[in-house]
Structures are given as C-alpha cells and as structure tokens.
Length: 324
Image (cartoon, rainbow, N blue to C red):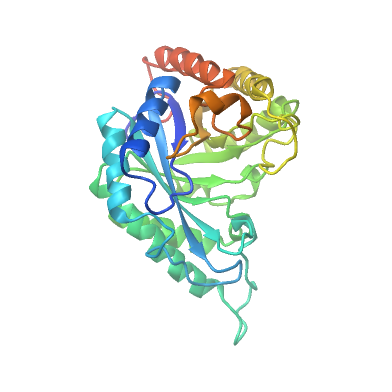
C-alpha cells in the first residue's frame, strides 16, 4: 500500500446522505467551513442507504432518500478542490430505525427464512457500486462497512466481499468496526487499515487504548478511528455513543472530551488519526451553536480544540507516515 498521508486529521461530512442535501450553496459552504475551521486534511464522505428492517435482504441504494450518484460525485469533487483526501463511506441503515448492528440471520440457511447469502448478495452490489465510484474519482480510501456487529462473525462472506472490492478499487480498503469490537473481527488481515468507532467514556480511554493496542499489534496493521466524537451535552462525556441522551447543551463537555481523547491518543504512536463525527451538509446557524447539543462542533469550543490539534499533528507527521 502506498503512503497516502502521514496523519489522518479528518471529519465525517454529509451524514446521512439525504437526497437533495449534498449540492447547492449550503452544502458547498458546509464543506468549505469544515476545511477552514477544523484544518482537516481528510474527509469521510458518508452516505446512507436503507433496507426495510434488520431481517430484510434488499438494500435499496438506488432509491430516495439515498443521495444520487451525481450528488456523491459533486461532494467528492468539492473535497478534492479543497485539497482534501477522501474516504468514501457507504453505510446501510434500517428504515424502521433499528440500528444496523442488529442486522442478523440464522447461521444455517432455513427454507422460507431470510438468509445471509441473499443479504450479502445485495450488500455486495451496494458496496461495489460505490467502490467503482471511489476508483473513478480517485478516492484515497474506501470503507466497506460500518458497525455491522452481528455480521462481523461471517468471516467467509467478508473476505469474499473484500476480494470483489479489490477487483474494482485500487486504493486503501478499511472496515469501521463498532466500539469494543476491535478484537472480535477475525479478518483484519484482509483489509489495509484497521479502523473503529471511538465512542469511549471520558474516563476509559487509557483502558480501551490498552485493549485496542493488542489487536493492532497482533495484526501489524495501521490503525485510526474512523469515527469518534461526543455531543455537546451534559452527560455525553460518559456515554458519547448515546445520541439521544437527555441533557442540557454544554460546549464544555464536548471540549473536555476531545481534550481527553486527543491527550490519551497522543501517548500511542500507533493511533494514526481520526475521522471525527460529524459535520452535516446543512449546518445550523453559527449564532445557534451554544444551543445546539449534537456532535457537530461548528462554532463551539471544541472547534478550536480540533483545529489546533490537527494543525500540530499534521505538522509533526510531515516526516514519515503512519497510515502507510
């Protein structure tokens, strides 16, 4: 794998990829502000496609609300114009609101029941569609899945999918496992980079990094956090993955989380960066930042924290490479 960057100072843009929101002045302004305010050198362009429920076997990526291919191309083109490296990240969701981690089927096929083989056939078509776009547009990285916890055990199918992706895409291939699941994926050798979701309680970072380090060492692969972040909300520093947690808006909570996460990660030279969560295609007004309690740090205290940290890390990494 060729060296693409010394450090991934990234932000996820555009989630969930709702049709009609990725083009036009507001979307363009959103990405421009992301690049300027955070000093990012990477972005994960993240889109969502739906299957009806967790036991459905058809992923309807050609239909609304999924963004159109033209919107994907426009987002990638703008990111490139802003001198950002791009990870294209297609993600499947359930239309009924069930979290994708619960997509699951019987281990053994049973007549008249939904099957892994049917689901993986649809998922492979979905992923290959965007892998081709990633290749055609020169995306430096492609993410083949996100937080698919119940699917992780299907090692044979994932290896087959990765082999098919490599037939159409020549860049860096990664998989975004869920928090706490780094050691459960048995096919890390098949991807180029290990990545996971870093939603760990503010007081647990040292312990969790100790655990992840053993996985990274065992596979001898580069590692970065494909997702990581915390809502600007009281209590979220202790359970940053709970986007629905009740609490008053708090920029301080978000800033303190980032300071702790960055500080602990700085002690580990194997942490190759972050693709933070997240920056929407339609931003709230900056004057409303203090009242906003979501993950985006636009106009909040954590914005400067991220900007300054990325500036430092990117400058430090100009010699040699971590994700290489």
